[in-house]
View 1 (spheres, rainbow, N blue to C red):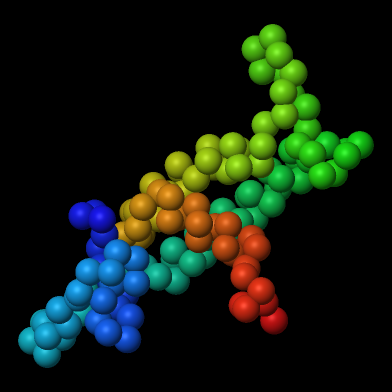
View 2: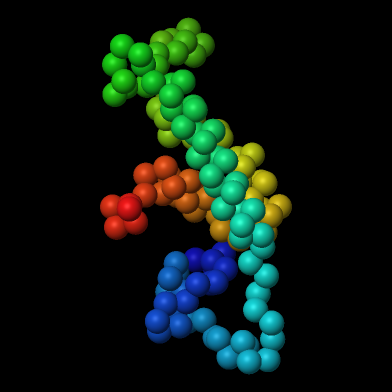
Length: 125
């Protein structure tokens, strides 16, 4: 986990992602780290979720809504999963997020979008 930014500590001052200890003594002498445009990043997540929901709706088989739509790829008829289409949608929005100051990885960006689409039961109101 050498590429972890170690931005969010737990109650023991260890990073919640990689577990490495975070030295918080700098808070007394230095300004906090720049976390980027958090409101803009959250708005981009919502925009990505809206686009993904449209992709899911368009990719759903009208005769069997539990399956993706059949598509012709090359000379074969296959079903492209929703996750496959999500991965293609993630690249451009991840670049936008990086421009806004997002410090995470592409994998984490996808997880944030998926969490926004299907929030855990503990966060549903």
